[in-house]
Length: 198
Image 1 (cartoon, helix red, strand yellow):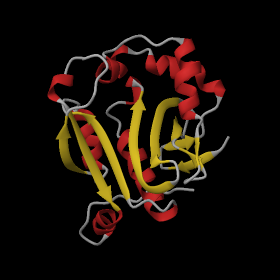
Image 2: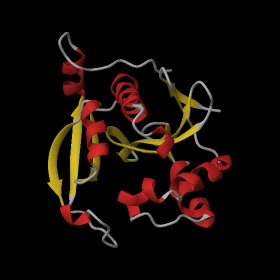
Image 3: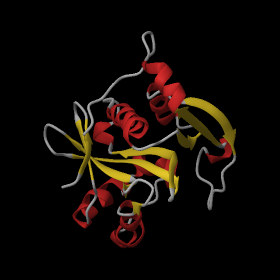
Image 4: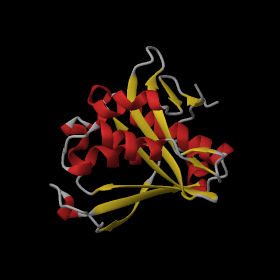
């Protein structure tokens, strides 16, 4: 099992095809997917042919993947995944942060903990200069995670939704943190939170 990093409560590891059932359960939960695709049910075929190839892709600029399975460190339970993916396969300067966790782990601070650890690894080890994250404007939980991880609001915009879902009429928002901004947060008096990574 290739581990990207560990925090106090999480292990982020590489996906394998053996994760199909975990991903199906995650993407088949209408509450998890409500602000992503309107809660449409997932299928095993969709996970196998569309989701897994994306999660297993190696990015040349990182020399590693852009999506990581999140497990509870104490029990090994699958919690969901984190995205930390270069926007350009040949440059690690700008990466997109994302996360999708199962309902059982909501409200426990896992998303913030994983996001902070990935940001730290990106700025200290992977040559990242800017981390960006997007979500629907109405997704207050996700926006709060971004803020707690140190990202700040950049802009609102209207995305290209193949089919409208509840809330999409309010558009989307972009947040970001730069290496300089992250270093400022880590100085005395800042609000950064270090996480152990390996």
